[in-house]
Length: 126
Image (cartoon, rainbow, N blue to C red):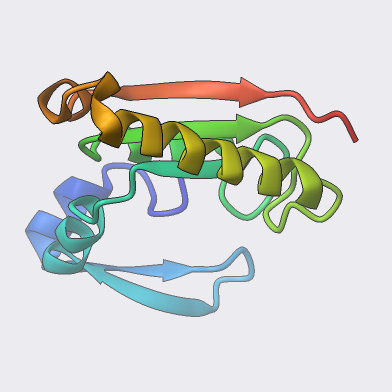
């Protein structure tokens, strides 16, 4: 995991953890406050490529477990920047907005949506 093993425990013990890239160079600092702020951000849906070498798909799945009202959509074969999957990403995001508009019109109550946490794999047609 990018934050490292037992990252929550280490943040609580030390007050922060420093995140480094694969070469060991410092990238950013994560505090408990910044992590909780990130986890409580209202991100109804996240899109992630299954071939992402920057943030592994297992990290995205683990992170998604902690976010309320969140759905993780995996795009099969996509890398971190969705290089060869731009069309698939765009159509998936558009579908999300269309679906969300229908929900807002009363198809699903807000209280029921608060507990949605699922992963959906989307196979690329490209």
